[in-house]
Image (cartoon, rainbow, N blue to C red; front, top):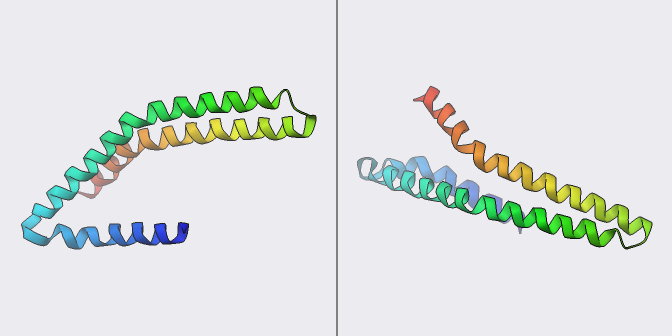
Amino acid sequence: MRLFGVIVLLTVFASLPAAATINGGEAAQRINERLELLVEMLKDLIAPITVAIFILAGLVYAVSQALDNETRMKGERWSISMVAGAAIGLFMVLAAPFLVDLLFGFGG
């Protein structure tokens, strides 16, 4: 199922340059507007999602402390992984627009 999603995503992004040349750039403008809307939506959602994951990681850590030693270690690893994943996701969403501007700035 994941492979299918990756294939669909790659197909959509591979068709963007062809779609951009239709109607003298009007399609390119619409694609750009949609991508900017997506970026703004992600910026609005990333903070609450990150906070929710941090809270959930804290709950996992707290609950695992009351369990046996093996489960406690697993809970600690899970909570650390959740915090690391949330931090990496936050960094990716916040850094992506700057990286895209940097790359397209030199390319254009």
